[in-house]
Image 1 (cartoon, rainbow, N blue to C red):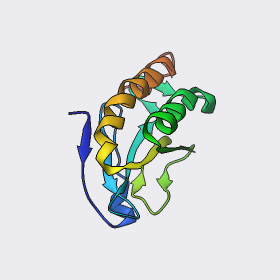
Image 2: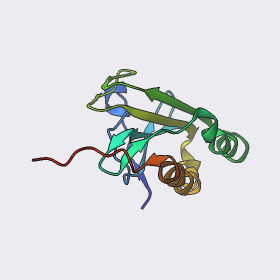
Image 3: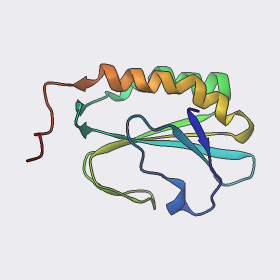
Image 4: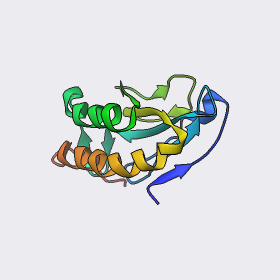
Length: 134
């Protein structure tokens, strides 16, 4: 399944550290009807360096808005750290979030997951890789 449903109330529980292949995670937000889908996308990894221009997210933002009446937000965290009352993420990353009606969260997840994966694939520079561990 591409979308994991999880209900939490604490902000620190709200954001999960997820790798490239991990699904978006749905958690509750301010009201029982609205939830947040979030995903951490590492900017540096074994596959190379991921550098996604902000305007590359426009198609996903438009789908979220027009098809799901959802709000899309992208955070570009260029250094490791704990952001937005979340858990510490030990590498530079993007944090993507969708505020969406909980009843439509899985549908949104299924719709945007392949587009997110395509963005990661097309914006990964495989010539810049982490050195192998010794």
